[in-house]
Image 1 (cartoon, rainbow, N blue to C red):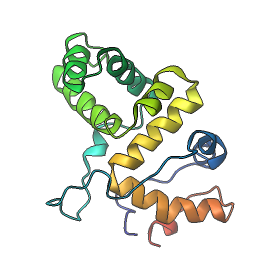
Image 2 (image 1 turned 60 degrees about the horizontal axis):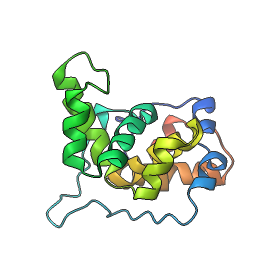
Image 3 (image 1 turned 45 degrees about the vertical axis):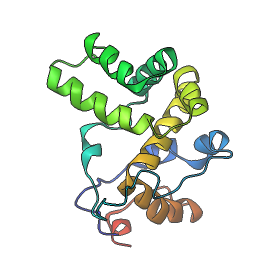
Length: 165
């Protein structure tokens, strides 16, 4: 996979934080389909919109809580932006960050959103990772092609050469 230009090297500690041991207990019964958000007219070229926001489980929790309160994504958008719930310095940044996080969270079930909004920090991170995998094709492909092999080999160090596999 030719992603060396996009992804950066990850330290061993960061890799271990996202290890299967922390994510697996929350992934029971979860179906991840690579085409989950792909529409018929979508091109196979990766969208890089995810660069607008990292996982941000703390902010994803705010949006998930708002969704559980209102039950409507349009109302969530208005509420989060009008109250500056994401604590952004500019309105444009808030709109960009809210849109990216909301689109990711729209891929989660109500049960997963509940976990995201109420659970521990590790569980929130796992749900934010799950949302990113479900929404962003590039992240799904990278995790399934590169990270899966690294975890299977018990190799916690992500090297540049791993991107070219």
